[in-house]
View 1 (cartoon, helix red, strand yellow):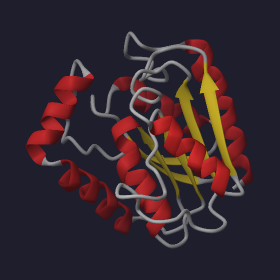
View 2 (tube, rainbow, N blue to C red):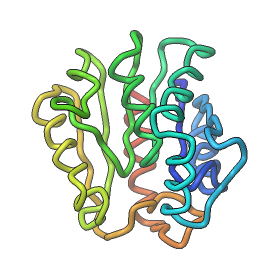
View 3 (cartoon, rainbow, N blue to C red):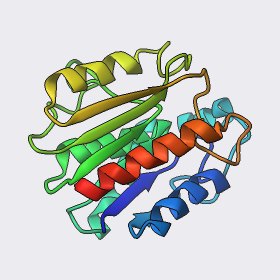
View 4 (cartoon, rainbow, N blue to C red):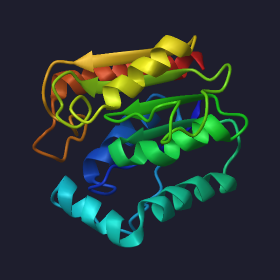
Length: 193
């Protein structure tokens, strides 16, 4: 059994994010799904990001980071897209991390956006679609490739398609086949960390 802190994407804690967490729970793991938006969900990524912009990217990220203070230190940190911001920061900076699961987004481990180098002994999986205009088009894939090149236990999984939120069953971008494979890979990861 592994304990996971899972952060939602910019459309909020949608039924699809909850369903994904439930699938992981059904495999015997503990999954915490904090709501960084206080119950708000949005119909589009743009609407969600506009809300984040009003509150402040840093403020919401740091709120997620503070939530971890209420939990044990030996967690796997996971995030969907915007949720990668607090998840990756915690995985890289909070002692005791057991691993990281980064879905649809990735930050570099060098340069101005970095939280610093990847910590020794913390495994990571990164998942995205090979033609996602955000993951591929905005450079997250390059950050993922940097991590895979520099971190001993790092994996990048690319799925055929051009959707960003492909593992959220409550959205029209959902891809059941890609999600089934992603879930199997996540469960294998959780079984070994």
